[in-house]
Length: 296
Image 1 (tube, rainbow, N blue to C red):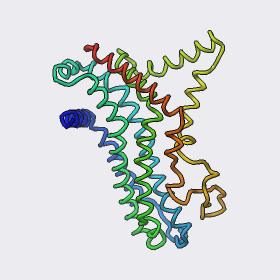
Image 2: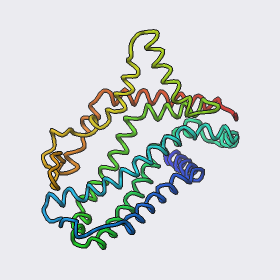
Image 3: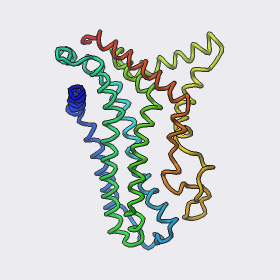
Image 4: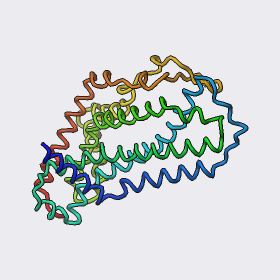
């Protein structure tokens, strides 16, 4: 067991060595956000004092949520690109011949790349977001003084964001495993224009279903699943009990992260396990193709 864990640990290290953008890109994004916080225009006189419990509960998450969303968007794009490129690149540069000579199975190689995209890269982005939020909180506390400091240095808010980040990493990996597995499969199969093949084949399948069968089940299923993550993994508005304390915005907000996440609902949803099964089939296909692959 320890030997297998050590193997995967070294394979993950290999991925970071070969893909330095996995940690350089979030570092650059964090630096840019800090520069904006330091040199951005802030009129402290126009910032209302954050004193009530409702304001303390909402101001910090609103700011941290904005910072985290930037990292989340970039992470999603980079992880998708990484999955498309990881198995294709080693065939293109012929490094696959070297790696196949080592005592590492194709399954371990493919699974390590999947873990890199779904676990390791998101953890790096979460760490970068945490460091960035600490820096932003310090800068804004200095620039805005006591008007924002109580909201930015709330231990409960920080804890909730760590729980939310870890929950999002795990649930996103499960829910979107079919798409991740498909990108891996395309990377293991295509000889050129991997992104184009990854998009065109599902699109062609949807068109053929409409033309030949007269139904639109595949396209509807893809669209529904892509947009079904938040309803499946989180509670809806009817579950929330609070309201935003600033201005007249009528949107409700959860009193804590514990009222927002819904792990039981996600795990009890059959669509989650159908997605896992389908994604596992795609990953298995990528392993088979990688075992037969040579240089391009």
